[in-house]
Length: 134
Image (cartoon, rainbow, N blue to C red; front, side, top):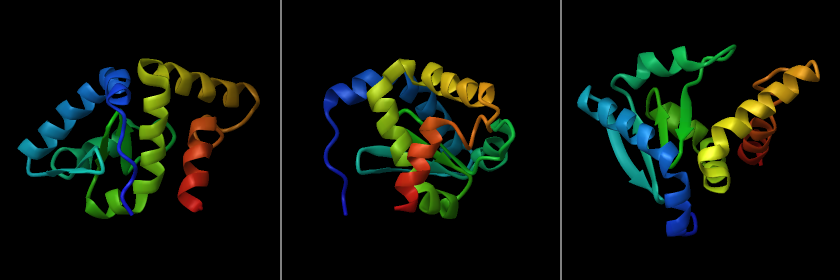
């Protein structure tokens, strides 16, 4: 089922995050990867993303990542199995805009200060996990 249309202001608000994602998607395409637009979100996989994404995590080895309105993945399978989870992060970027990286880091710090895992117990990750499990 297609997602509802995104509001133009949501794209504008999240654009400072989306721009680096578009650069990475273009680099993936230039190195043999694929790029498509699905339900208003750019999805890119393969190419340089395959070796790059797993190196970006701290304590985890990500196979996919949302950067504004761009979802980057190591391959098509990773893109397919993480789509619901990453779309939640796209929605979070729409809500928080350029403040999202700071809010995400703050949620990781809050989890760490509570003695919890900064990734798995991050409120943004919990929201995305809950949506992808349901």
